[in-house]
Length: 368
Ligand code: TXA
Ligand code: MG
Image (cartoon, rainbow, N blue to C red; front, side):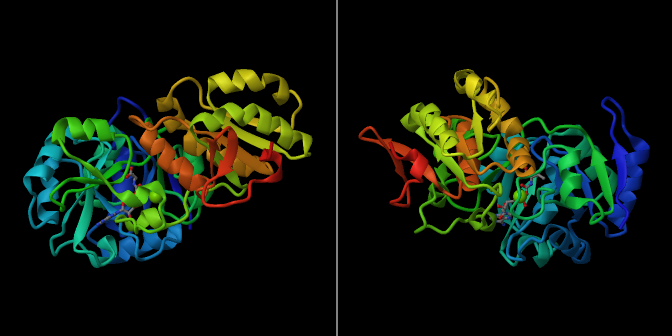
């Protein structure tokens, strides 16, 4: 299949591109489009045949439901049997924006979208290109992130095309996504709103408006809990090389561990902040070290994380060592994605020595 491509211009209605892309959607095809979080893979959310093409392009398991994207608050009404007070308050405060709400679904939502659940996920993105596109289509747009299932979500058009060129009918290129991590998913059908996936709307922002907010216990990686968002149970974001995530005080040991891994002849990828980058400057010159530095802020890390993880697949080091961040604010979403990328190979410091969570054996180069 030929993938049509449109470069979108800021401060423009991009009328022609939007009309052509919308015509493909109306014909039951799949088109990728930018949002403020990550790129989406969109199709007519009320057309089960079109929705099936999304699952095929991504290689997505059928039991993983999709989010319906809308371009005005009221458009959620026909999709649900009713909104409770919590849902209404969340809409009022956080839409448009990176917040997806789980609500009870109405009969017009196809089973293909909700994966047979009684609920449906709905989101009103703040990205202007996304809004113009959804409006031009005139229907709710079902859209998962535009990656092949299991890979990091794409945050620019090139990364979308790497996975989707030739598999989808169209690609709207709106440049880089600002937030870089997928939306926060909140289940509003429980008495207390529950975060099923952390994202750009943080726990702190939610509690300030809602009071009590719960976090799905399965997000901590405890195998005894089954995640309530089906997508959270799958292996995700993982580069091909093994990733070890250093948490808390263990990060202080990173320079030592890196030097040892290099001495053992390994090619090493490091994902870290500016301070550690400075410390490692000398080692980088030795060439066996691939440093991916996110800069000075955690917002910048969120924006760059998926791009940096994809980059490691292009260079393929033997091992990737990642520096963790604290979990306040956007840190909760960052650490959730990093833990998944690491397949829960988490390194902590206990009584002065490194410890691998969920396993007794540390890799050789980490033993001090
Ligand atoms: O930022 C985003 O949310 C991006 C952009 C494109 O909008 N979309 C996105 O979609 O990340 P996706 O399909 O990659 O992730 C949707 C998540 C999955 O973990 C899925 O299992 C969960 O939302 N989900 C969807 N419907 C659900 C439902 N009815 N109940 C529980 N979880 C649901
Ligand atoms: Mg996804």
